[in-house]
Image: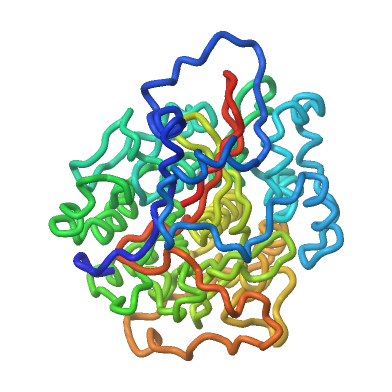
Length: 469
């Protein structure tokens, strides 16, 4: 991931319509809500009037593609999970919550990944207690109600840029941390985002700035080794998992020896490395780093039916797939957004890996990677393809099978010709995504969450809003 590689991706979050921009983008300015005793659920809707829609500063690269279907209701999603490719017994994750509170909140009902990944079954064994996941990203809001108490002090490898209260601070990193280890909030923690490993700890390592940060260019020019340094530092802290929801999948992307060495260093110290496969699925499927480094668990994105997300890069290094569309994410502004991207998919797998490591702490990174491959559901024809790897991640199955593994001496491969594998799988003519060009593909340190729509604002009242990046 070269320090001076061009950025071609859209921001991880949008600037909303002018009238809403301050409330949506400025965490500190409006954190004190109007007096109310209720939580308001906002439906996904168009801006209140045409003026708002026209005023939204959305660039062509940032617009949501028309080919992405509208978000289904919670009930529709559950029906799709029962009948679609991700057919599983309807997990009782909502049974953990008072039904009235869950219904009033609405957010939990929209977190379809909890059912698809069979978290309820996995949680019978562990919720990730004792596991630390390093999130190498833009920083994490340790005061967010869904994360409070689960976040360790941040290690800042950049040293400048936006700070708490700025609109371009820790948005992407907070979103990823919530997917991994969010514990919700409110009565019985029935509100907000619930992560895959809600009892795991997050160690934020700031290695990149938000797309909207005015200091981002400076960081590219002066902190080009932040990712490699961050990986090594996290490994030295003894973290169990390193989440890399970022990457360079531009045409000029190439392996960086320092990053490769850092990844191999982390693997050798026992840290499991998970990365986004890339968002270049309809822009040439360029190889994305750090996902392509040997030993990394590279994650592609799928929708509720288990179909490849159109933007998800197809390459030989794909390990497994995970939810990457219509994903509910937390934000420092205390609102909740619906996002798309392989960033989210990687975070879901990092949460799954945290559960596996908690249940089987003696497993090596190579064993965990193989376990994910062997237990993935809905495997493609032939057992694997570049679109979905070995299939859809299944932490419950991996936990069950993990106890059967015997110690071995599997080691990650070293840097070499494996980087230059075959190209993407052929796109069949009937593939409905074949003609769509994915937004936000490529660029150095791209935050691989490409679209976000605000769907909920806690405490306080306001009109429904929709913001696209």
